[in-house]
Image (cartoon, rainbow, N blue to C red):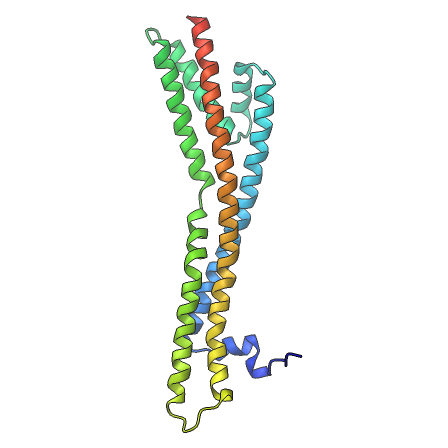
Length: 228
């Protein structure tokens, strides 16, 4: 049976009695962990909303809705990422179509550029805060290791003044230092898991949006050919 920790070796006591550099490392890792969880939940809700609105718009679009009616509807209500791409492309298509002397190819190119610009803006919004999660996931273990090395170094430095070192004398210092490594892993693991999950979801949304832009461009091309 594993013996229980003595009061002097409880987690709280280890943190309280840690050296100042180790405390600063722990405070930095704790702040990084709180910010990671904040961004994790923000991104979770944002991606759920994006996927839900993309599903809804695709069902409505491919159900054969009139493009002019759908364009007016999108402009009146809160739009999702794919809806804003559609709105940018179709709005540019209508604007260029009304201008005399603009050929079909120029109209289609303008619509594609408008959709591509809108797509980049939406991707920037979806990918916001992901670099922070990646940074926390990759750097936190090393920051914790720095605190551990520093704490162990101080523990052994303190033993240099002792005539006969025992495990009871060195254990508290080493335990205090190892708390920094544990805290680094505590901050890093959720950030890495969330980053991988959200990157996968965003990649799937990216593929769906790029496919929609290509298919919608073909629809606009057929409309322009019929109007010619």
